[in-house]
Length: 82
Image 1 (cartoon, one colour):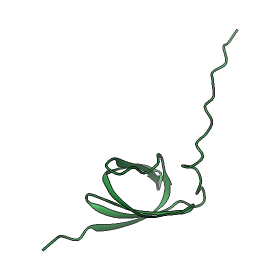
Image 2 (cartoon, one colour):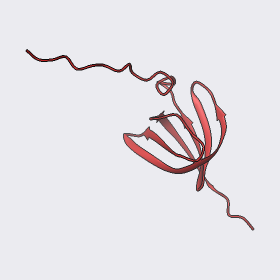
Image 3 (cartoon, helix red, strand yellow):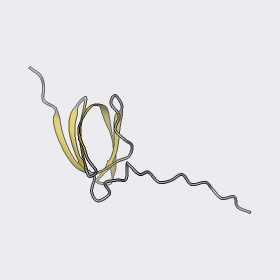
Image 4 (spheres, one colour):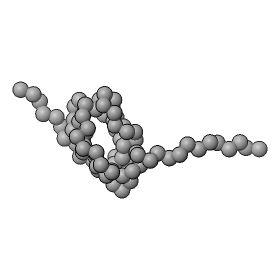
């Protein structure tokens, strides 16, 4: 008999793109979450991602900023102070 995984539903944002074999890093409810390793990505759209880790199944609604992880801020160089 296999133990069922916990389902977690959150509203937030991915702080980096999902990668199989790596942990997910996300921000929700004013906190940063670091998950166990991602084993599957079940659904991914502009405003929702469903993925599975070693321990849980996540459903992350990324509104109101759905494209934040796809369009990171451009690199800015520091200006020298004279």
